[in-house]
Amino acid sequence: MAEKLKAGDAVIELLRQEGVSHIFGIVGSSFLDILDPLYDRDDISFVGVRHEQGAALMADGFSRISGAPSVCLATNGPGVLNLTYGIGSAYVAHSPVVVLAPSASREHQYRGSTQEFDQVALFRPITKAAFPINKIERLPDAMRHAFRVATSGKMGPVLLDIPRDLLPGAEIELDLLPPDNYRSGQTRNPGDRNLIQKGANLLLGAERPVILAGGGVQWSNAGDEVGRMADVLGAAIVTSYGRADSVPNDHPRFLGHLGRLGSEEGAEAIRQADVILAVGTRLGQSTTFYDHRFIPADARIVQIEIDPEELGRNYPVAVGIEGDAKSVMQELLQQVQEAEPRPNAQWTGEISDWYARRKERLDDEGRLDSLPIKPQRVYAELRRVMPRDAIIALDAGLAPNFGQDRLYYYEPRSLMTSLDLGGLGFSFPASLGAKFAAPNRPVVNFNGDGGFLFNAQEFETAVRYGLRVVSVIMNNNCWGSEKAYQRYAFNERYVGADTNNPRYDEYARLFGGYGFYVERPEDIGDAFQAALQADGPSIIEIPTDPDEMPRPARLADVQAPRARS
Image 1 (cartoon, one colour):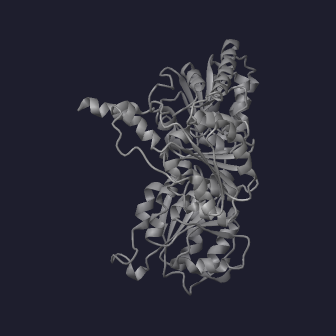
Image 2 (image 1 turned 180 degrees about the vertical axis):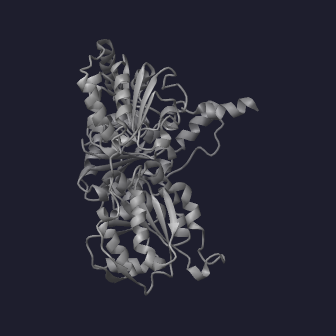
Image 3 (image 1 turned 120 degrees about the vertical axis):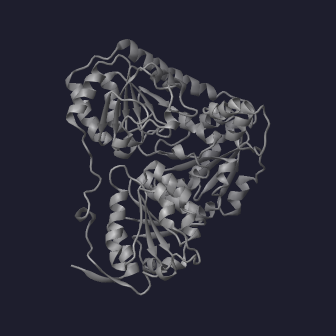
């Protein structure tokens, strides 16, 4: 039965129906009607941040860890504009973030009014959908549609533009429908059985199979199926860039991730593959570089993707299966098991050797004793003390990227990176969103000195909400990734590559948090344990070697234009 509610109350009731627990944003005059109903509620919290970019990244982090939709709310004009990077991050990660975006009053639109922008046009390239409403009566249907789109298929962010004159004083007839009444929920497309049988036959004939697991494995929780398939086939497992938590890293066939600063052993295994089972991955640039440095030209690919547009888009496939990673893998696994395959003993032996070599390589890095500390040694020390259920957020940049191959991930949704967006300033706000989503799990973010300062103001947010999040800042006083390009492609002609920084441990204490400064590798573990036990947010600053700059993976992209000129 319909109930008449104030417009702002109706918004909150619709969010409650969707199971939304947190709204991330900065208070603004354009949506006070939505905030007011939250005054005496404890089922939905408004998380006030210090910059809208932080709000969007927190929402992204919340959805990545929870698997559930989250909400951003910002004032029109500059507030909404500041969300763009974070919403772009959610778009790349397929996070179901819904943006409620107030806009200029209808009578002032298209006149260059105060804080007026075409917000819908601005967000269309970085959302699954962006659309306005022009009548308050449309608000319930529009919000339901926004959540329907955000949570269906390959999920992603949606923006709903609400002119600011619609809310004040308005009332709405609202039927409080549960979401099952207006959408099917997150359906699991099981894939075409004939194509699955074709894929099974190809896998059964493989001599050197490798499974490449991507983001679809994370979102559908298909890690168990991937691990079981590897056992049945005698296949190696590698993951796409930023998806090292797709399978438990202690699986004896797991060899690490592909891409920038990826696993040498995983790359070597996939180079020798005759059949690649690409599960929930579009085989994108950050994983494959669109060439054959990892993916053999003669390898036959069985690709499983929920988005049919991605099937065969970057590499030709022998079999392309549209469907949910978990559902397709269950059927594929059943068909393979029924055939009782006999794994290639020589290949499984090589996989075991690669697994042992990777462990030995990482253990050897624990003996690097030069000062300033090398990033590899930082991760070696932290592997010894990192909780098994920790959530890790890695920023873009050189030092954080070492962590993809050098930390272990045992549970689904344990790793967050900026993925193909490659944006600095991601990891710290995203980790705060993750902590709101999983308050009982340890949350750690890794940053370079430059990237942390992009959103360092959110440390006050962390203090205010008592978020026990550990921030590790590896300070090499430079923009390491860019400086590496200048070293290898521009004969060490460094322009704009070096920086100066404050003491980050003192920064933490200034805001009311906890700060640690570590110059010796043997002290890293103790500082980390103390930070984990702190009753609020903490920063561990570690000066690291500025000369530790591996050759960039995309060096040719910089060198080639210079060679042609």
